[in-house]
Amino acid sequence: MALLTIITPTYNRADCLIACRDSLLKQTVFDFQWLVVDDGSTDETTALVQGFMDSNPPFAIDLVQKPNGGKHTALNASHPYIKGDYVVILDSDDTLVPEATERILNAWSKFAGDADVGRIIFLKGTSQNEPVCRAVHTGVPVDTLKEPRIGTLGRDCCDTFRTELFTKYRFPEFEGERFIGEGSAFFPMELESKGVYYNEVLYLCSYREDGLTKAGRRMRIQNPRGGMYNSKTYMHPRLPLKTRVKKGVLYSCYARFAGVGFKDMLRDNPYRFLTALTCLPGLALANYWKRKHL
Image (tube, rainbow, N blue to C red; front, side, top):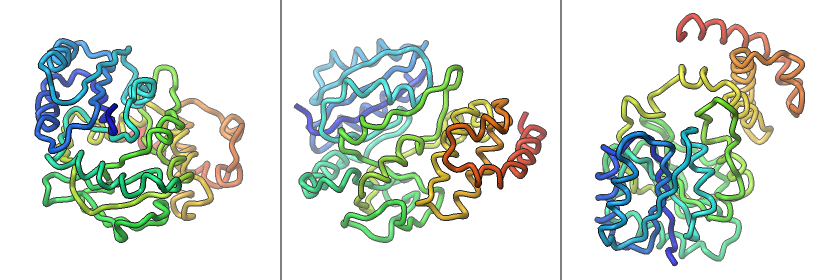
């Protein structure tokens, strides 16, 4: 059985999947499963992946098909099919450097017996020598909520997870919405476990113009209940007050786009005082975004 599962959620990205697959063929260690979750593609994705499977690759390939619902629903759908002890997410328009799986498995071999460590975190980069960010402390378990990261283009990292931790937290799904921030599931993992950073670029990202990263604010406005949920997640008292206030403002902002009234904003909300405090700024932000982005 494979030690590592590489999950690739994909939607109409057949043009990218060949490069993604080719980067896996160049790995120095093949003890992994490539789990492709087709999120209702209407292009030739299915035939292409089946061709990959029929080509006698040196690693296991599994294909899961589901109706279109967004990346977060594809990750949820992957849970029953994960065969590895550890998980890494590889987007369909990105690639791994040749030593990625070997480095991931070597790192986990050092911490496999440390139940406190739930995530080992490497770097993403636009090239192997151009990381998106760097961590300050490396090679030791840390509280990732407090660990400083120095970003250049952002704070994206290549997270790898223990499978039991990854499958414990599903992304919430809201009818008619196809996006939610990854923190809605990843933040509870950070609360529960420690992480280990390595300042090594293993993941090469392209940031396509039609990708989620560049889809921007309009996409978030169009998925407001997911925005509310994600914002409320980050109002947690473990986070700095500045972050909590910002997320409170966003919570009220997205509530306006979702048509959720003040009383409903407070229902099942442990942060009622903060919500009340940030409600008016949130409504003002929603009016500004509506004029600018819609």
